[in-house]
Length: 259
Image (cartoon, rainbow, N blue to C red; front, side, top):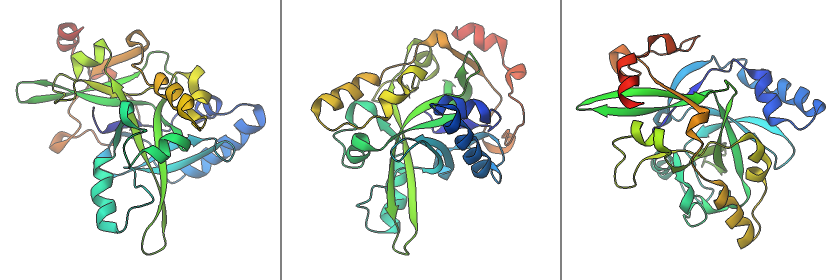
């Protein structure tokens, strides 16, 4: 699983339509989006290790869009040093253990969210070379990733809301791309199908609810994803901010080799 996402902010109305339940809510969510993204330029590539703000949708206190810091900090964290260390370890949360791990179990029960992105990146390894692939929905709709969020107040009194991305086992296509997965095997973010938005956001008050939530976390159908290699994202040749997707620059020979 990679720690990078695409976040372009270019389809704000679609984000609101995806998240809202009725026309009034959509208008309010559009207003929230304008406020949240007014000072946030669209970015083609952001790394989780920089702990950026991610656009998240919740329904705990009515429909809301907020920016949450990537890298979950549980409320029981004692100080800034512990928060910094733990947030590097909580960029992702394995879907199979979210109700067991101390860092995630409270959020898994009652603070799940949708992390709204245009897509994400995964790296394919050929020898010592890491080739980034961009993954997005084939229908060009915004992508909602399953997230867990928490609130933490630092020693200075600042309240920080942070989020972790839930992962699941990789589908066949993602397993081909994610060919250096480590001991856990190939993974992918839990992409929430649109029809399951409300199911994912509903609280889990008992063991039956938890089992229902766990059953939602499964690989996304590969035939609904568009995947293609892109130029290097990091280092001296980094792409940085881009107003347009880079699909015209894909490498046909690699695409043919993998797929």
